[in-house]
Image (cartoon, rainbow, N blue to C red; front, side, top):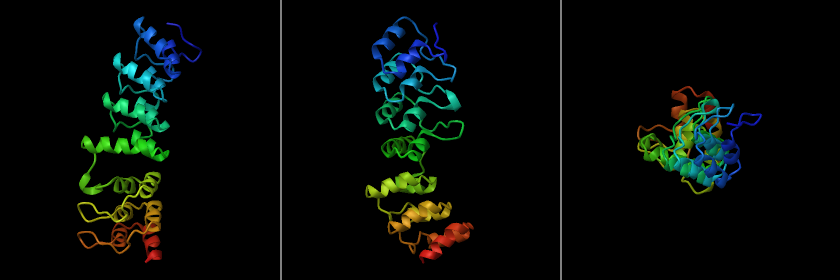
Length: 228
């Protein structure tokens, strides 16, 4: 099979450009669907940068939605990192694993949240929730999850969209409790700026400050004392 200088097959080239007609012709001729270029990327990975039609086409022809490529990343990592929500939805519907981690140990959700693709992050959080990877007793809401995971962009976006800063989980803890417990200083600042109640107590009678002191989170302790 003819390769380019970067060892991309014609299928990789066509997929990366969204050329559904060319992709179909190549697949009809028997081009291996999961072949890798020299960066260990499949054609599906190449198409995941926004070419939803090609992604659907490749999956229909049997492309693996969970094939690992460069840095142990998948097509879902690629789509999430670039904010392509429709591609993310298609991949998830065809069995892409939402909890897979790449070599820096980032999931697709991590990449979407860290890069500010909040719509994509919400889709992925919903997927984790549905399939049992989300502790609903601890987190209760996406705001709780963002506070725990230190995804400052997600926390800010959820607050702008009207997330209740004082909503509690099954243990009576607010997002501020969660952030203080985990030493998430920037998240604590954002929550306080948005009116989080510093004196709110969980079911055990603990405030966010109590938790920070108990777990020796000295930076959060100092921050909370300034607000007291």
